Length: 103
Image (tube, one colour):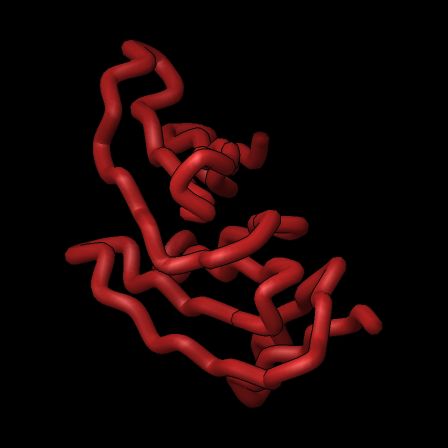
């Protein structure tokens, strides 16, 4: 579970292993109303990171994907590295670069 910096949104990742789909749900932190349902990972989501200004949500996972979700419309850019399992992600605010670590 990760709260946005402003504390208004909550992100939670969970698997639907029967279908090999891994979800990230976004909730209003005050009402717990679901705001968005994000599905683009095919393996365990290991890290969720809100950017400092809450403009983006970054997710990484054991599927070798780093996904940058644009918060205003939940569209995404997906970066893939086959045979990788990411465990963490960082965002460099000065130049907008993404750094992920794993195996």
